[in-house]
Image (cartoon, rainbow, N blue to C red; front, side):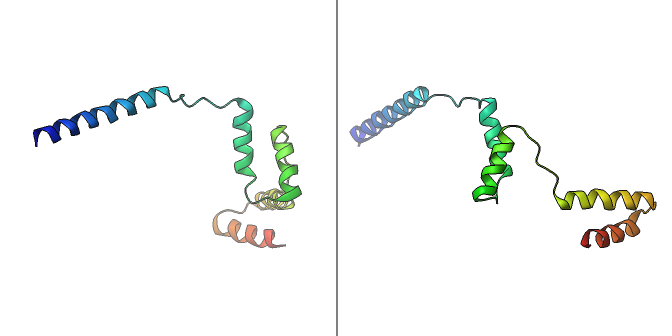
Length: 103
């Protein structure tokens, strides 16, 4: 029985030592370069896009270009401006914005 415990102890210590050495030999995770960070960010923003649309988006994103405003963004800007001009607040503003954005 004692022999088995000694063998088990030696094997355990050997495995522990081997794991410690292997962990020390693994390279530390390096920080991403600015280009790699940009690629990661653009990739996340491009989710849902495919084909030529994705290629065009990635190209402009990696160059640091701002995408053109979509018609929805323009509509939101216009509706916000109109709601502010009318002095709408609270539920009236929400109702107006909902109606305005649908047209």
